Image (cartoon, rainbow, N blue to C red; front, side, top):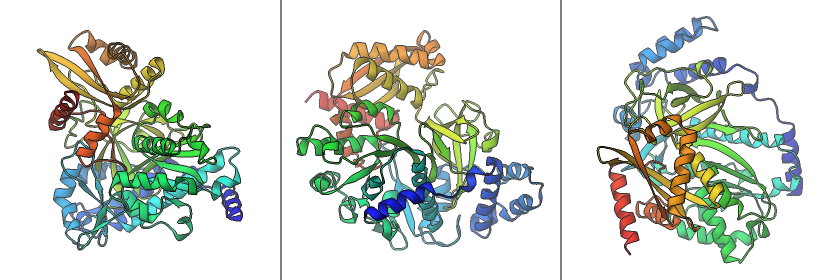
Length: 518
């Protein structure tokens, strides 16, 4: 395998220039929309919203014209999941052909956070699987920009810790985690590198999966690990404890790279690095059930949007003009293409995709940070923010405050969630912070509050007005994981919500109270 490692490294160094690096974002996205509309022109959705007219406009208008986009916004409404499923995707799931994308849909990714009462069924077409594979290869090719990576690294295994790869057959389609769908399509040449292997990856029992990975760990030479931070950290702690190690590099000396996504890594970083014997290269991805949206393409960079691979992006300013106080988008919001948006402002993301999503509100809020490179950061969710009285507290603010207070107090915070609650006739925030390190809850509260006042001017103003108090409850991390286990959301891609509301908040508070009183 040494020869293969050398060839892979040389191939990465000699990679050809990617089209996205040669063309302007507007041109790439205009062409991508044309491809999507052309592929779906004869579907029920394409006929209903007159895709033929939009195609003609793109083909016959001047290259620099954006009239086609104004027509697209006028002719095609914005969809959230419930509207898209109720009006279109349920027909696809029932086995109908040519509904919102050409042909039949063989796979549906089950997608839900703890805030959802039931799973979402996101269609995954063969075109989407190929698009995800292409973007994955692009990200691998960016390793040429990281200096001094040894050729031996490319002979090592890649441990991918996702949900179960077991797919349930439902007559006309298969359903399961996106990781299971993509794992079933892994190229034969990659199977040698893929860990934990198909048998272990199929386990639906999370604890059994972790135990078997820990048992096999000494037999593997792992150079890359991929997964959500919380569950990767739990796995590494289990392996270290089982073999009485000082750090994970005693068993995996060639571990160099950690690829993560789904949540901000910063709150986990301090605790994570205590499990290592040497520094890792951290690479971020933005892979959702709806598509591979962006990836970190250079050392120290942010997430580079994928502009020419099956996705058309729109950006809706995340403000009171376009969203209701509970995070619902209005019927005809302001929307812009990527070349029209401003750096430093928050936008909700709309996707049109090669899996039959059209002007689809994915629920994420992003911020453009580098126009020239089309790089973004994820700042939160449209429904995962707090603005009871105008404080406009984003998940980005929360993550940063937790990162700062963790450094200041020398604690490791793996999980946290925040709720907005009444305080007399006014309001308060209630924080639940997960750490196994000793900490003074009152001091933690004071420092969190002070950091948030610096990070967010609206928060600072409201703390002297309608936001009268914040409460901080310190809990063992296991309480968070036990709650997710109770909800059937353990492991894989499942993440604890950073903002908790409604019936889930009531359930969580009852759960915490029962645990505290034990």
